[in-house]
Length: 133
Image (cartoon, rainbow, N blue to C red):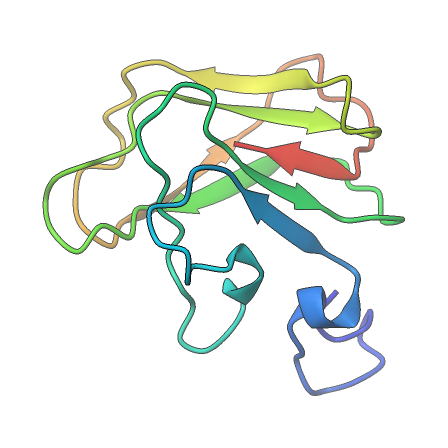
């Protein structure tokens, strides 16, 4: 998306190209515009620890068949690690399907750590344009 499907050698923020929009609820800092995730250096999105807080990614007309996803724990210290979350998918923003649910997941346990999870459920056999965590 950031190279317009390889038509350009220069990477551009896909949110600036209109091919991706990112939204987050209950942000801790108002200056954390989620659409700046692709800037250099990237920003971190931090929400208040409230029920149903989320970050969503809308790829608009683009459809994606997910097979895995990666999260990076960007906490600056060794506290506040993500433990419980669900990756959901939709094509209309109203009806969401759970792709994977994590409960008391201790995989992310170091600052600045990232991890990739494979999506192997038989439910993942469709293309989606929207995702949220």
